[in-house]
Length: 358
Image 1 (cartoon, rainbow, N blue to C red):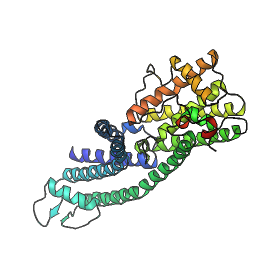
Image 2: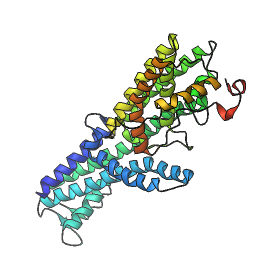
Image 3: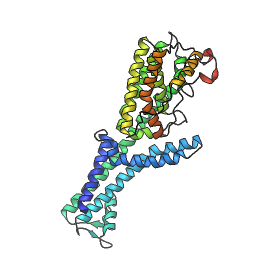
Image 4: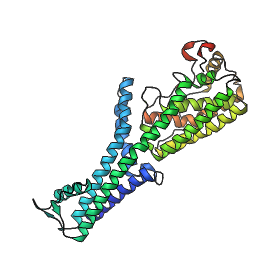
C-alpha cells in the first residue's frame, strides 16, 4: 500500500506539472493539484485582503499573492515528490543501508530529499537493483523539476508584461478613472472615427492574447498592476462598455468593429470564469439599469457625443450590458478588483475642448 500510494502521488504530481506548464488545457485546472491549491489558498488570502481598509496597503498585499503562489506551488510539488519516493522506498522493504543508524521512514525521507535535490551524499545506499532504479528515477525527476522552474517563470512574466502593455494603453486613452463616456468623447467626430476603430481592433487582439495566456496559466489572473485602479479587468470593462454603447447607437465601420470586439470580450469572460470555476449569478444587479439611462443621456450630452438613445437603442444597450456584466461582477468579487462606474463625466468636469486629448 505504501508503494502504491507513493507511485500514485508521484504520477499525480508529474501529470499536474505537465498539464500546468506544458499542456495546460488538457484537464480543467480546478481538478488538478494546482487548481485546488490556488482555489483554497486564494480564498484565505483574499479573506485577509478584504479586511485591509487602506487601498494602497490592500493592493500591495493582494499583489504579492500571484508571484508568491507560483513559488509555493513549486515547493508543494517538490515536497509531494520527496514524500512519494520515501513511500516507494518504504514499500520496497529492507533494501537500504545507512552508515549512521537503522533505516526508518525518517531516514528514507532524508535520502529521498537528498536524491531529489541532487545532493548525492551517499550515506544511505542500496545493493538492490529495483531500489537503485527508483533512486535514478527520482534523480531524473529532480532534474526535470529544475528545468520546469527555469522555463515556467519567464513564460509567466512574458505573458504578464504583454497584458499590462495593453492595459496601460487603454487607461491612457480612457481617462482616470476610465469610462466609456471619456473614451468615446476623446475620439468623437468623423476625423477620429478611424482612430477609434483602430483602438477597438487593437483591443480585440489584446483580449485574444489574454484569453490564450490566462486559460493556459490561470494564475496570471491574480497578477496585479503597479498602480491602484489600473487593473486589466477595469480596462476590459471600459472596452466592453464602449463597444456596447457603439453597437446600440453607432453605425458604419466603427459599429462593425465594436461588434467584433464585444464578441471577443464576452468569450474571454465566459471562458475565464469557467477556467477559474467561478459561480455566475445571472440575476445579479448590473452596473447599468433602466433608471440610469437619463443620467447616461445627460452625461453623453455634456461630453458632446452624438448618441441617440431611443427606446429601442436603450433596450439593446441594457441587454448587451447584462450579457457581460454578470461575468464581470463575478470576476470582480472573486479577484477583489473594484469595477469602474458605467456613468462618468469627462475628465475633471473640464470643457469638451480642454478634455479632448489626442
